[in-house]
Structures are given as structure tokens and as C-alpha cells.
Length: 560
Image (tube, rainbow, N blue to C red; front, side, top):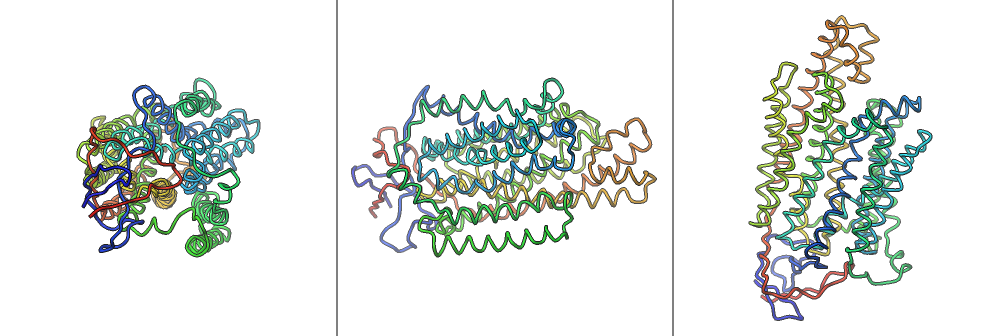
């Protein structure tokens, strides 16, 4: 079977797997093309500058998710408000998740560059407000604004790369982006500790401004996409306002109790239950709106027709649940069980960083060379599972060799998967749905991370309470440890009490990581059903197709 460009005599052989969202069922006389040339072609220094700008944008957005964690005590002390401190993280997460699914469709309507610049500038404005915050309320608002931009950055960088390079070349570049994401996620606490200890916590936010400026300049000068059709008024009319608002409402109602349940609120509190119910009702309403009423749905139903893409959304959610749990609990282990500072715990995570960076880039290069991507799901999730189990065996007597080796194996697993999920999603849909599919994969990972952290948090809290029962620790100390394991660090001056508390923490830590393994196992099982699509190798002797606008797919023509 060969595809043909209606305006060119050039043909290319493709292998079609299961029907894709825009493809008629088998036996039909018409099918959509699954391979397209880049929307724009950048070469040499221009491409390098744009790519560096995109990588920096991902670095900042990923860094912002974790860099604040080590600055929390100083921020709480400065504003004398410990009660609302969790909102610093919650505000960013809520807006990131709520706006993330909408960016794919918005980039189709308004164009890639305009939507990307909006996301980066919004993120920069939010960061500036956070750095200059005179009150905790101002800081929380700044974090919410930054989250609106951050949700777009994650998606648009990957969408833009899919427009700049063909699928067979995409692996190596998205592999590097995946390495940057993993690196930033893990070293965030280290940089936060350095800024807090040696400068001020405000530099956790100010650092975004000069680096983000480089991204804006690179996009303005070199990222020249074709203009999308229509006036501003016409484009605004195309937005699915009702669907977007209902979707955002559902996300907020579901994520808010997940973030607050078990600490700020009890799981059986009326507001927790009510928000889950409202979130579920809104989610059902969103599906009805998109299927029955929306003219241009923010999430088109046809993006779920393909079996492979549905499985990829699912495995992305379980990958997010496991990865976020690991990134949260491993640094806590180093600080509480081994008595390391925030800075030293960040340094101790470097073996995991090395594994992520090397395998993310390596797997991307291999996908570009061979065209096969499904094998990396199997390799990555197996390595993650083995590494997580080994990490669950860590205790205060573990050798440096064990610490390094276990983290390295885990990082290799994460690196093998982190960018493959997006490549597989982009290969599994027609090119007109790539932007929306990319946004949904990242959204599912974020949503999965929220559910995963809520589940493992509940397990950890129940287990450490169980471990502390029957000890001779004073009741007020037990209460403090249950509220925050960091309270154990303050017991170092009382060796007997410290040993009891650390043993309780290690027991809870070990069981919690063992419960992460089923998340990884489910992701592995889902990956077994993902279809491998074969895309033709790039032929340098052929002329590329005519450039198409980003809001309309090229009209397909297929000769059989």
C-alpha cells in the first residue's frame, strides 16, 4: 500500500496497523495518511537555537514542580502561616492540570508560536509575582498563574518538536527533552536548597526570568510557523468554552481533595466527599458536551477510538503515579533516615538522574534509528519495577554501592519510558490529532501522579502510625512525626528516641515503595497492547510536501 501526494508524483510505502481515529475501518476505500513532512524546516544554527529554547522552557516548568519543596520551611517562617503553606504546591498543580488538556486544541486554533509564547510569558509573570510576593496570598496567586503557563509549556514543546522533525527523527530530540525533564524534576530540591541556604528562597522563582527570556527571544526570532486561517474573532468563536470550563471544574474538584485529603481534610469529611461527587458529575457532563454538543471539541471523541492510544493514556497515568511517588519519597528517605541536608539529599539522587538522562537520550536515538518504540516500554517498566523493589530494601545500614546501584537501575527505567509514551501516542494517531493527543498524554501523567501520591501518602501515613504504636515515644512527638516525618531530624540529639523514630520511618518507607510496584506492573501490562506503527525512513532525495497550516490537516490521498 502506498501513499501519494496529490500535487506530487512522489510516493512512500507505509505499514498500516489498526485503524486510527481518522481512518475508516478496514475494507474502506479511503484512509488518512499517517506520515507527514515537517510543518516548517529549520536547519543548522536556527534549529539549534530553537531547540535550546524549547529545552530551557521544559527545564523551568519541570523545575518549578519540585524546587520549592526545600524552601517551604523558610517561606513558612517568613510569612508566619504554616496552615496554608500546602497551597503553594497545590495552586501550581491545580492550574497546570486544569489548563493542560486545552492547549492542544488552542495551538491548532491560534497557531503554535502564539500559544507557546502565551504559555511562557504567563509562566514568567507568575514567577515574577512569586519572587516579589509580600504576602502568602500573593505567593499563592503567583503560583496559580505560573501553573497556567506551565501546563502549556509541557505540551507545546513536544507538539512543536513534532512539527519541526519527521517521526523517524523525532525520537532523538524528544529523548533529549525527556532527559531535561527528568533532570529538572530530580535536581529541583537540590537547587531549592542551595538558593534557600546561600541566597534567598525568592531565587527559586527569580531564576525563571532570565532563562525564560532566552526562550521567548528564540521563539520570536526563529520559530516562524505558517499563520493559521481566520481573524481573531473567528478563532475565538472556535473555542469550546463550555467544554473547557466544565473540564477545568471537574479537574479542580477531583484534584483538590486528592491534595488536601489525609492532611488538611480527613478523607471522610463532607467537603472531601462532596468535591469527589461534583467532580464525577462534571466529568460525565464534559463527556456529554464533547460528544453531543461541541462543534470543535477541546477533546475530540475520535482521539479515543484507537485501542493503542487509550492504552497509552492509561500507562501514562500509572507511570506518573509511580514516578512522582519515587521522586517524593526517595529524597525524604535520605533526609530523615540518613540525616542528610536538603542539598546533600539532592546530590544523593544523582545516580537516578544519570540513569534518566542516559537512557532517555539513548532510547530516543535507537527509536530514530530503528523506528521501533514499544520494546522500550517493556524494558523501562521492568527496570523501574526491579529498581523500586530494590529501593524498598534500603535502610540506615545500606552501603553507598547499594544506594548508587538501586537508584541507577530505577533511573534507567524511568529514562527508557519518559519520552517513549509521547512518541507512541504521536505515532498512534493521525497527524491532525497529534497536538491533542500529546496534551492528553501529559495530562494523564499529571493526573496519575496526583492519584498515586494520594494513595501512597495514605499508605505511608497509616503505616508510620502503626509503626509508632507501642513505642515509648512521647504522645506529642508521635503526633508531630505523623504530621511531618521531618520532625524525626530534630531528634538527633536524643539517640535512643531518634533510633526508634527512624526505624518506624524506614518500615513505612519500605512498605510504601512496595505499593508503588503494582502501579508499574499495571503500566507494563497496558504497554503489551500498544500497537507498533511503522513509519517510512526519511529519503533525502525526495522533495518535501507543500507546507500546510497548523489548523487544518493536509488533504489525504491514497493509492492502493
